[in-house]
Amino acid sequence: MPAKTTRGLKMKKVMVLGIGAQGSIIARRLMEEEGIVEVVCADYDQKAAEEIVKFSNKGKAVRLDATIFDDIVKAAKGCELIVNALPPEFNMTVMDACLETKAHYQDLASGPARDMGFIPAIERQLGRSAEFEQAGLAALTNTGSAPGMANVITREACDLFESVETIKICVYDGIWSNKFTPFWWSPETAFGDMAAEGVIYEDKQFKTVPPFNNPEMMEFKYLGPRLMFDHEHEEPVTMGLLSDKYLKGVENVYFRFGGPGCELARHFWKMGLLSEEAIDIKGQKVVPMDVVRKLTPPAPKYKNEIKAVLEEGMASEENAFLVRVDGIRNGKKARVDAYFMGPGLTDSFKLAGISHETYGTGQCAFLFSKMFVNGIISTRGVFPPEALNAEERQYYFRESEKLKLTVEFNMEYLV
Image (tube, rainbow, N blue to C red):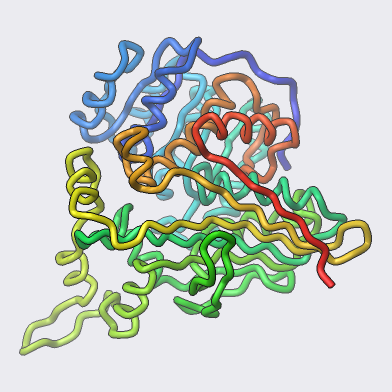
């Protein structure tokens, strides 16, 4: 289990590994931090690393193959934190490099990895806690908006109860432009996640459910009813595993997702278009998902691409991010609805020239990095954000407000 220690000194040198949509935001923001001397921007794509260091003389671009342990160790020499913004299959190698270089560790996702699903991948990470404790290091996993901010909100809400029955984390992405743009992150990842069997934590047990399980009209404040489904995500797993330690013995945890992109994926899935199994079409073997990958436009990444989408107009710009916690407070049944609110697509572009997806996830991830840099995190070992204590969570919320990322908590007693 993670252990507590005294706060650390402020950091001077960090490395961001993976300069993609989220990693680039984290790196840029870290370069703005007072006291930071150097941010090593490491990526297999040398051009991506070089582009990001143009924003500050604190940046150092490094071409790096993250499959090679020695290359990570060499690039991370002298770094006090490694932010792993790569896919989950790199987590173990980067964690090994942190132990070798005596650097703290942060990632944005735990699973699924190529060699295992969500539950074993997360158990494998948490199982390394003793190694990091003994080294006096912290390894903070699953940092972003969801997972990440969602976990911090959930723990804050759970602390208002004597016991917790159910946690529902509900994300509705209703950003739909006139220019066909089904997803604002990797379409391949999006379709893959939605076609995957999900994991829920129900009656104190992990259960696997089919894609688009348990359709439900969810009532969102400010938005109204929207159709939601169970969705593959880390939160039910980490929260189920840590139920008794941090979340007042929660019995049920669900992550639910909805929106036009989700509806599109559901129709494709019903038609068999998200299948990886080849079918015969006029004597030719064709993998349906290969066709979808080929024909789906990529998520707009660069400023001119996002601008072009906005200029063509928006059909819908709705977002909702709700953490609902039901439990017992003062001996009575009660509910907390916590709404996480941030800039939409139009406002994110005005603020930072990026999409709402990149703004929310990247900025939330950066705030966890900022906690490391400023010596705020006192826990040692391997742990997700729901393990942060009350003081650490309040720091996170205060800093998030400065970035126009706010949380509204509403509590009511249930009859």
